[in-house]
Image (cartoon, rainbow, N blue to C red):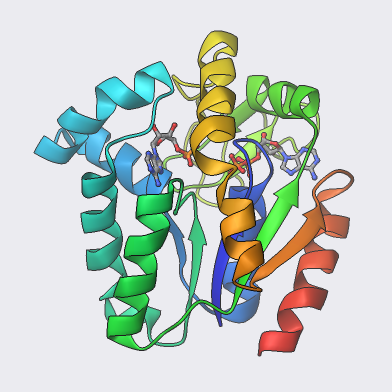
Length: 215
Ligand code: ADP
Ligand code: AMP
């Protein structure tokens, strides 16, 4: 199953991807998680990416294209992949098509998760995350024990870019550079719209009902 989870920051891509990866036994590939791990480890890539991420801007295409090419070549992607946060620009989408053609794993569906702007800001302002990739919300999706990850027991933290001014910049970048991909994938007949508002379980049912057709 070869899937892109598409949508603005805060749409619930990471939240849904965690569950979908378990349910369908395919890897969840989040370029944001890969970049944050590089920032934490102090790699050259992390040092280059940090400045862009802190400002809520996109990291340059050539960096992301290299990351995704290497990641898709790993053996756990043989049964499929669930991309989250990539592609975010037309050059990234074009590069993805070329990479997928080369490895013979063409995209089957792009799930466009739709949520209104003000709801996105509320979600991102209250988001707490774990280095293991789990994402919580202080009101909408709290962990069982305050500030502790249900999955791995580590302490939760707020992302540096989940501050209101940076959130607004990320939403602007999304509108300017990423949103045009909706038409790009619509024209290729790959786009399926998902209503991302409402209970997390309800959104999961909608997505899995769609994805079951690609099993
Ligand atoms: P994305 O990966 O698209 O940026 P996340 O999955 O991290 O978004 O979700 C953003 C925030 O919204 C998190 O705090 C998450 O717990 C919360 N969230 C996710 N889905 C929902 C939902 N259906 N209703 C309310 N809050 C949600
Ligand atoms: P995310 O975790 O998806 O919200 O991404 C966090 C940040 O990482 C973004 O605001 C960008 O700075 C950077 N980033 C993640 N994925 C990409 C991508 N595909 N292209 C450019 N920048 C990205």
